[in-house]
Image (tube, rainbow, N blue to C red; front, side, top):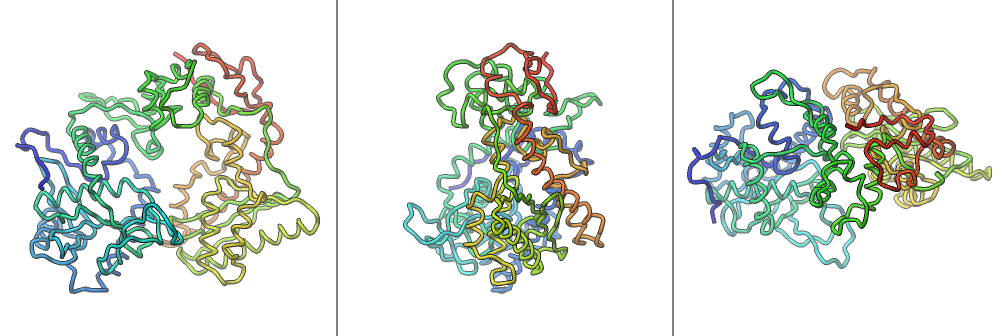
Length: 575
């Protein structure tokens, strides 16, 4: 069955859409389409560029491995060809029945607007046509021990196409991968070159197998999504800004497009939403969608909510969402859930923060003990065997301090902020460097991270505070009075600093190593300051749920009734 196409390309303004645009903000898609030159001079987010570079390197590694295993089976499309020539070469290889094609580009479709390329096209020897296989720089499965389960994913060997149920892995849901495969399937289908099997494949970060995706139930959703998105790009559907996680890295969040027929810039998304007092400012993403279905468009309308919560609300306690709106109006950066605030304290306290680069490894473990910062680091470019040496030294030092505390009859605790990354690299480092000096076993890591001596300050904050402006350390620690020395400090920026510090792209820049040490030290000091603040001053400086218990008129401000010494929140202005 071929994909339906419009009767005439003249019916539409020519516009093209690739699979990347099927997931994410519709409003950004429209702004990008209507203002193609506005962002040309805007520097791309360093983190986005680094992830793109890492993905390119990963795909090159997979290509080399696959082609080297059976070079006679492959046609590799020259990546230096211009678009039209690359598409022609791809179609020629398909028509010749080449078993495996790398780097294909399918002809863009002026009528449907589809365009797209695929890393790997595999000929379906049994049914005819081709199966699209994408190579992605994220995990598509997780390992698991074989055991009874309701579902086992379908995977194939990397070098020999033999799809089978795989009891050794479980799926990591990736809707963007499925949408891209559906997009490519429709493009192949247009030319009668899609396998009737209605499947696609994905090779993930751990490139040990091909995950097989059944597209049977994906295509209908894809068709509906694509119709909506191409209409947005063609200017046939209006869009409105709404705060979503993507906003953090979107240039339109702080920059507005030029007004039509004028040199004057329109307001940015942030300015527009703030002027509108849009509800997504305090209930971003799908939460705002639910609230709008109930007629709640503004923060003020949410703050005035009384009565039962919506029946379809599935985003945590609704009452706290209402309080978040009231706190936003008041300018309170935090709200206490309880009368008292507590955090586990110990006689020996160590703060820990790591720095990693992509999925290549953790190059720096920073610690703070008795106000002394101690880093454990490797400056050999990741991935490197020297990472095992630095991790082993860190773990040995940490466990020695712990043992000393126990021997002296003292309590011990180690602290981090949002333990997900630390736990991941503790386990991963133990696995990768098993048997080397200082490296713990998996069981030793688990015994430590599962103990009450490993304390996550993010969890302590989440459990005890409502955070209208976010719960990241950079949001919370300033409320406790802490500030970072480097104004650009942040996880994304540190990726670029690391590349320069180890000479990935040019000569080694030693100043960037110093910068990373300063950034890492400030992170561990921030958790220490936050902990002290929670223990001593938070109750006096942060309003409680009771202060926001009832709906109040716009402009009401708890600061007139409550002492907030030391709080750094900025009140929002009411109209």
